[in-house]
Amino acid sequence: MIAVASGPWFGIVPRPQWERVTLVPFAGFEDKPRDVLVNFLLFVPFGWSLAKSGQSRGQIGTAILAAGVVSLCVEIPQLFYRLRDPSATDLVMAMVGAAAGSLASQAFHRRDPRGTPGRSEAGHPGRE
Image (cartoon, rainbow, N blue to C red; front, side):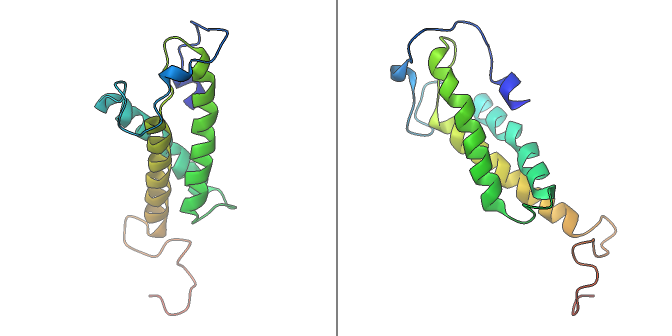
C-alpha cells in the first residue's frame, strides 16, 4: 500500500536529483499540512500491525526503526522521479505514524471495551 501510494511511477530521469532533496524536516516547500498528515496516516496501520505481531509485541522502537527503513526505501527511488521530492519530513512522519499506531494497538489490546482485562493482562498475579 505504501509503495503504491508513493507514485506516480512515471517521469523517470536517468540521474538522481539531489537538489530536490529536503534534508531538514518541515523546511521544504513540499511540506504541506495535507502531505504531512497523509505520511503520518499511511504508517499508523503499519505500526498497529507490527505491534500485533508476536515477535515485536510491545516494542515501539522496532516499529519506528522499521517505518524508517520502509520510508527510506520509498524516498530513495524518488530521486529519479521528476514529480516527487524526497523529504526528511516524510521519513519523520512515517516514524511518528508507526509509533502512534504501535502505541494505539498496545493500548487497545491491553483492555477490551468492557474494561475487563485483555489477554495480555489475564492471569498475571497482582492484577484484578
